[in-house]
Image (cartoon, rainbow, N blue to C red; front, side, top):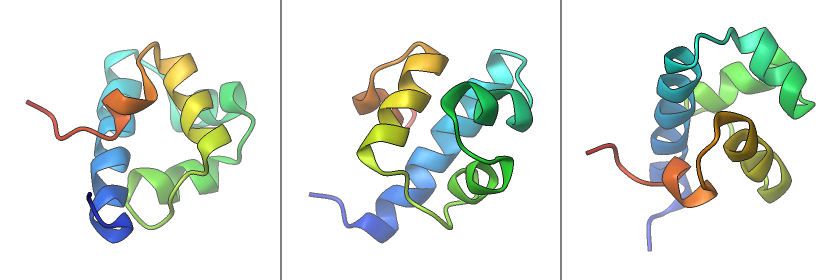
Length: 74
Protein backbone atom coordinates (compact mmCIF):
# COMPACT_ATOMS: atom_id res chain seq x y z
CA UNK A 1 0.00 0.00 0.00
CA UNK A 2 1.30 3.46 -0.92
CA UNK A 3 1.66 5.97 1.91
CA UNK A 4 -0.54 9.08 1.67
CA UNK A 5 2.46 11.42 1.33
CA UNK A 6 3.66 9.36 -1.66
CA UNK A 7 0.20 9.21 -3.23
CA UNK A 8 -0.47 12.98 -3.19
CA UNK A 9 2.02 13.86 -5.98
CA UNK A 10 0.82 10.89 -8.07
CA UNK A 11 -2.80 12.02 -7.88
CA UNK A 12 -1.83 15.64 -8.43
CA UNK A 13 0.28 14.88 -11.46
CA UNK A 14 -2.45 12.76 -13.01
CA UNK A 15 -5.12 15.39 -12.39
CA UNK A 16 -2.97 18.12 -13.93
CA UNK A 17 -2.00 16.00 -16.96
CA UNK A 18 -5.60 14.95 -17.65
CA UNK A 19 -6.96 18.46 -17.09
CA UNK A 20 -4.48 19.93 -19.58
CA UNK A 21 -5.17 17.13 -22.09
CA UNK A 22 -8.85 18.14 -21.99
CA UNK A 23 -7.93 21.81 -22.47
CA UNK A 24 -9.45 22.81 -19.15
CA UNK A 25 -8.24 25.58 -16.86
CA UNK A 26 -7.93 24.98 -13.13
CA UNK A 27 -10.89 27.32 -12.67
CA UNK A 28 -13.06 25.29 -15.06
CA UNK A 29 -12.20 21.94 -13.45
CA UNK A 30 -12.59 23.27 -9.92
CA UNK A 31 -16.01 24.73 -10.75
CA UNK A 32 -17.15 21.48 -12.39
CA UNK A 33 -16.13 19.49 -9.31
CA UNK A 34 -17.44 22.04 -6.80
CA UNK A 35 -14.14 22.95 -5.15
CA UNK A 36 -12.05 26.11 -5.09
CA UNK A 37 -9.30 26.73 -7.61
CA UNK A 38 -6.89 27.15 -4.70
CA UNK A 39 -7.74 23.66 -3.40
CA UNK A 40 -7.35 22.19 -6.90
CA UNK A 41 -3.98 23.91 -7.21
CA UNK A 42 -2.91 22.37 -3.88
CA UNK A 43 -4.03 18.93 -5.11
CA UNK A 44 -2.13 19.29 -8.39
CA UNK A 45 1.00 20.40 -6.53
CA UNK A 46 0.83 17.43 -4.13
CA UNK A 47 0.23 19.64 -1.10
CA UNK A 48 -3.33 18.44 -0.36
CA UNK A 49 -5.12 15.12 -0.69
CA UNK A 50 -8.62 15.02 -2.12
CA UNK A 51 -11.19 13.24 0.00
CA UNK A 52 -13.17 10.41 -1.56
CA UNK A 53 -15.98 12.67 -2.76
CA UNK A 54 -13.58 15.09 -4.46
CA UNK A 55 -11.49 12.24 -5.91
CA UNK A 56 -14.59 10.68 -7.49
CA UNK A 57 -15.75 14.11 -8.68
CA UNK A 58 -12.41 14.75 -10.37
CA UNK A 59 -12.48 11.30 -11.95
CA UNK A 60 -16.03 11.83 -13.22
CA UNK A 61 -15.28 15.21 -14.81
CA UNK A 62 -11.99 13.96 -16.28
CA UNK A 63 -13.73 10.80 -17.61
CA UNK A 64 -11.45 8.30 -15.87
CA UNK A 65 -11.80 6.02 -12.87
CA UNK A 66 -10.65 7.06 -9.41
CA UNK A 67 -8.11 4.21 -9.65
CA UNK A 68 -6.64 5.86 -12.75
CA UNK A 69 -5.95 9.00 -10.71
CA UNK A 70 -4.04 6.93 -8.11
CA UNK A 71 -1.81 5.07 -10.59
CA UNK A 72 1.68 5.99 -11.70
CA UNK A 73 1.57 7.11 -15.35
CA UNK A 74 2.90 4.51 -17.78
